[in-house]
Length: 223
Image (spheres, rainbow, N blue to C red):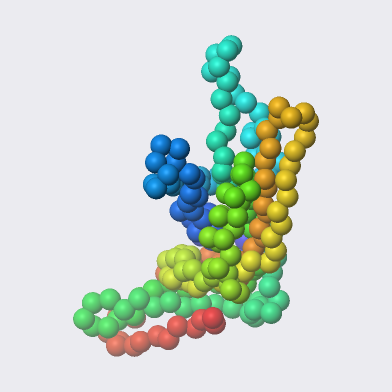
């Protein structure tokens, strides 16, 4: 019944989600030239919130007398859950056929995918800043693109190219984390939750080419 295969469907979703927020830039005042502000690109890392906060609040030692801190602002994200989507459910043994017509003889050749499962994938995006203005800049660059969702395309496997995946923002929360005395570091944290309406695919197998027959197969696919 079970066989080994790996389409990297979930891995591609994780990479695609992170790449959406890979070019966020915040603007800081330039002490040397007030007419030319400094543009700082915000780095993003795949990491849970608790682990990342601990890294931010701790300092690293170069020598016994020199210590450095992680620079803010920064972003991190994590995949939180995967659940089947009953509203987009297919039959238990649904099949996708994706023909690829090659050559001048129009002979079909392609791939077949068994057991496609629509899933909702949850993501959390965390924003860490030292200044509240940086938080507001980052949130303002993200929210306008989710009205109500943002759709991107992913090549899921050899059979499914350019699959359109809606990404929906479900909630956002802004808090300030401050523990200890006045010498400790202040960190503003924003948490944004998303749901990606994606798919998990079964094994992908090549379709058989029928020699000598000019037959064009249709694509059985539900958006």
